[in-house]
Length: 140
Image 1 (cartoon, rainbow, N blue to C red):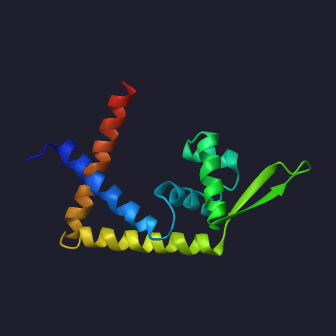
Image 2 (cartoon, helix red, strand yellow):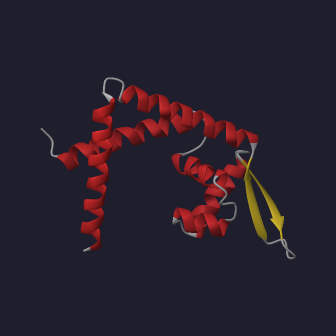
């Protein structure tokens, strides 16, 4: 039997593989999907996005440019010197996010299909406790 952390790592790898398949079907990467979610949440400038996503500006610029090229985002220059860009999710971007979210929810439902609700709740409690324990060890 695997240790708890080894089993968790294996499960995370499987989940990442599935998430890559789900996002790829919509023509975006996992990182781009996360970016679209933040834009929908109202973080519409590169500065706000860099802060909330903890990304450097060059990585963020590449992802934003890719989403604009894929027509999932639009950008508008604002301000007196027109150097500030405001990004907004296009209808195609909204459709992609909705499809990814729905497919991920289906995947999650399939994973926990045979789990009673009390066991799902217990797992959430234990995973949150594990997360806090890991955080404490990183702070030390």
